[in-house]
Length: 145
Image 1: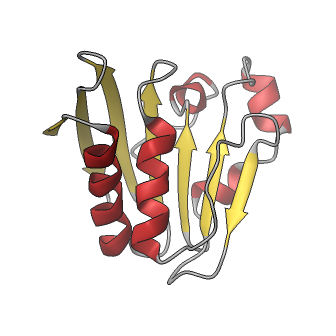
Image 2: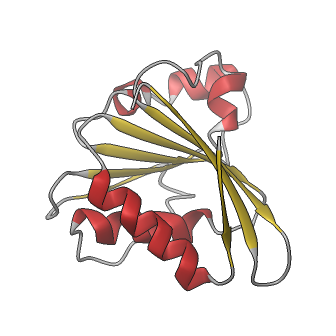
């Protein structure tokens, strides 16, 4: 497991940008962290690293936002509103667990609650913890990457 201490939203975005530049087709970045921890900020960086030029925003009410125009497609999922295994299965997100591009999933712990193992496929499992108003501790571990 690796740890990165971010001192600002810009540093969180830069970490995501590095991950986006290094990403390969089929990568799933599984994000966990409290509201306001910086999950969407990290996704903005991933998008920039992939070469996506449109504005990235949280798909809380749409479940999935798809962004093209970069080196690889970016699928940004937000599972915040899905509370049960049945809701997760009926949402039809299986295709994004082995994406034709890169998938970043906010509230990914809900997938595990639904029976999906984070170790299945090419997965970077990420936990963002709030240290202070501007600082974040970002712990991450790769499986199959």
